[in-house]
Image (cartoon, rainbow, N blue to C red; front, side):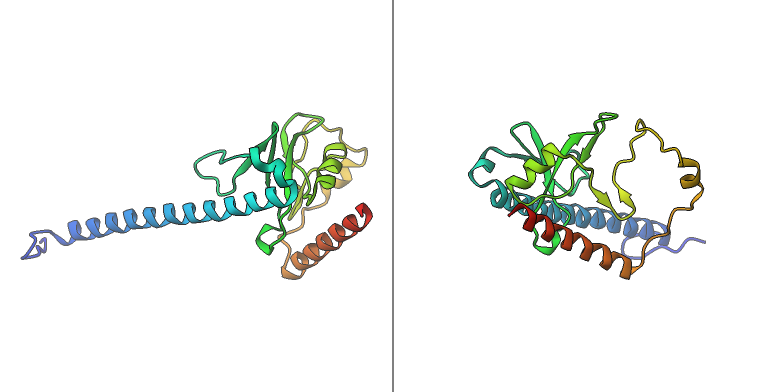
Length: 184
């Protein structure tokens, strides 16, 4: 027996399906708005980093997103691609530079830099950025070390705990400060 709402004539099933469809539409709209807000925030951060690091040279930068789902924008300036560095959420306005892997040609991102001298260093000494579990790029072409069999037998570490994450952040901050002092 089907229960029918006396005012609308809808069954419980129809009402539930209609409510679910409304929820899905509202949720999709909320997600779209959240994405727009995050993109706007990330664009402001990238623009600020470009201005702080490149000054007037940043005036010709073109900022865009690689695809519709990306949150982080890419700036193109003088044929080079940049994105905000990893410390942007902490108020550090560094940038990363995209360059091809010298072995396989895959586009990879550099370590962060925070001034023109840093960009010069990245251009002359490219080094892939590191993430939570090591380098972001594992080149398939690069030669395998002689002791690779021993390395491959070692299990990968699990996700680091909070202490390990904090330790890594502190190490990165100290490294950046030492690099700044060396450059000065």
